[in-house]
Structures are given as structure tokens and as C-alpha cells.
Image (cartoon, rainbow, N blue to C red; front, side, top):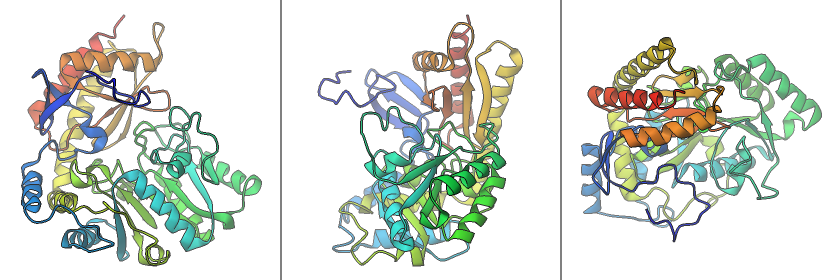
Amino acid sequence: MDLACISQSLGVIHPICMERGRNAEVWDEQGKRYIDFVGGIGVLNLGHGHPAVVEAIRAQSDKLLHSAFNAVPHRGYLAVARQLAEFVPVSYPLSCMLTNSGAEATENALKVARAATGRQGVIAFDDGFHGRTLAALNLNGKVKPYKHRLGALPGPVYHLPFPSRDSDVGADQAMAALARLFEVELPPEEVACIIVEPVQGEGGFRLLCADFAARLRALCDAHDILLVFDEIQSGFGRTGSRFAFSHLGVEPDLLLMGKSMASGLPLAAVAGRAELMDALPKGGLGGTYSGNALACAAARVVMDLMSEQQLRLWGARQERATLAAYQAWRASGRYPMLGRLTGIGAMRGIVFEDTANATGSEHLAALLDAGRELGVLLMPSGRRRNVLRLLPPLTTEPEVLAEGLACLERALETLRP
């Protein structure tokens, strides 16, 4: 694959060129078939080319490709906003703006939070990931490669340890770190918002501690701080529910969405309480391509397909298969590099530990190459890039999922000393 005209600052995990895809199966330019456990990094929860989504895009293309909503509105944007108000499981009336990407949603959430509170401070979490634009970058809880060599970034931003059963950081430890921050760094009345992923994506598919989430919600209420949940990767069915915050029992003030929202077309959103979303002056939010007509047509079908009942069925089926395979691999004792299983539902990661012959990140790098040769595409995550994240489409046929897991097992065999 010739990358001569591509910036060398772009990292490529798999040096193949994908030509076509159907649900969880893809083919490269040489015609080799793979089972896709990457899913566009969480974009394809409904798989490649879902027939209903493709038909909606085709039908829309005959009517209108684009209209900049803040110049001349179109019905697709309005319909998506109305549908989101029913789709997002919160108790209050939902208001939203559509964006092109998750990073853009993050940036606009920061604007909303500043305008609504009159404050500037933001609290984020270690190992979090919220985008690659400048303000979003400073929220990320990892320097390399995202913030390396960039100098000062928009702030002020402060980071806390992420409490999770998957990180060995408890709610008390994280709350103590927050109390220290308020005593030493800045008072709570200068904090505009706290932004957190209910399940970390780039951070290694770690589920936020529910006890901490409840305590954080109470603290935000007490100090008029906005609680922002970033569900760009964990939302739209990835955990077996429409949104992962349903597993935590608390509601956000603002919610970030993206990735699988339009099944492969660029669409994202920031949504929340109307009084917050209305805080900026008229014209303070918007964007030329935000809420493109084709993407809106896709998103409407996505939400139609993702009923709670259907998501539970898809999620439970995938979770059972993944857990059974992982438990068998661990029980065999053949793979000493296999560590804990992270995440929840169908959003699962596998930690790779250091052994006498290689580090966990080296094991995982070798696994990615071996998996590709054997016909399964895999994706790393984690601060040390030692956590395998599994992102097959929720719609993956059981036999294809079993085949992909079998390919993964054969790849594990290549790691044995």
C-alpha cells in the first residue's frame, strides 16, 4: 500500500486497503476476506452496509444531498432532533445540535458549559479520550501521541484517576483526589463541567464505578457543575443498551454522541437540558456540514433499528460468545499473557500482561499482525496499548462471530513461547 502522499503523522494499524464490506465481513483489494472486529473504531455497530441504512441513503440522495441547516433548514435535521429526544433515556426534555464528529461535539459542549455557567475550569479523567482538536486534546488523559510536542493547550483542565473495577481505582480514591483538587488547585465554583466516559474507549474499555457516578452527580448538583457524559464510542448500542450511562443509574446534563450514530456517515451530536443548550447567543452554535441530509437519513434508520429489546438481544448474544471464549482461553493455561476482561455487555477489552519474553504491548502488537494474517482485524487501546478492544458489529451472525473468535484463538497460539 503506497502511503507516500499521506502525512506520516497518521498512524495505520493494518497495512491493507479495504475494498468492500458486508456486515462483519470485509475484503481487501486482493480479495482476501477478513472478519472485522474493528468496526471503523466503533462506528459500525450495525455492520457494513446495513440494507435498511443503505436504502435510506439512496432514497435521500435522490431528494437532497445537503443544506447548511443554519442557513436553510431541512427536515432531516429536525427529524433526527425529535427522534433523539425519544431515543436518549433521560427524564428531562432534550435539546441538541448536530455536528460532524465526536471531537466537534466535545468542543461545542465546552462552549455550552462555559456560556451556561460563566466558568472556565474543566475536570477530566486519566486515560480518557475526547477527540483530537485542540480543546478536546487537553481533556485527553494521555500525552503520547495526542498531546506530544504541542505545547500549551486550551484550558484550564485538571485530571482525576478513573475509578473502575477494571482499573483498581476505587470511588473513595477518586473522590479523595477530587477533594484535594478543590483544596489545592481550584475551588468548585470555578469549575464549569466534569467530563467523563461511562465506559472508556481508548482507555481500555473500562466501566466507570457506579458508586462514584452517583457521588459525582450529587457533587455536581451541590456546586452547580455540569456533568458531561461522553458516549461517542459507548453509545448507540455498544454495551447492549442505547447508552452506557443507563448502567450507572445517573443522568448527565450534557451528552456527547457520535460514531455509530449514522452507521458510517459522519454525524455526531451534543444534547442536554434546553436551558443549557440555549445559553449561547443565536448563531453561537452551528456548522456548514453539521447535520448533513444523507447522514440524517442514516441516523433515523439507526434509531429505528436500535430498540431496547433488540439491543438487549444483540448485546447478550455477543457477550455470551465473548465471555465463553475468553474463559476457555484463560482456563486452558496456554496463554499466560492474557489478563483481565474489561468493560460491560458487548463492549469488551482484554488486557495483555507482561511475561518473561515480552511486554503486554509487544504481545498485543504481535497479535494484531497474526490475527490479520489469519483473517481477523483487531484494534489496540489503553495507555500502554496493551488492551485488545473487541468491536464486532452487534449484528454479526453467530457463526461469523464464532469464526472470528476462533481466528483470534489461533492468533493467540502464535504468542506462546
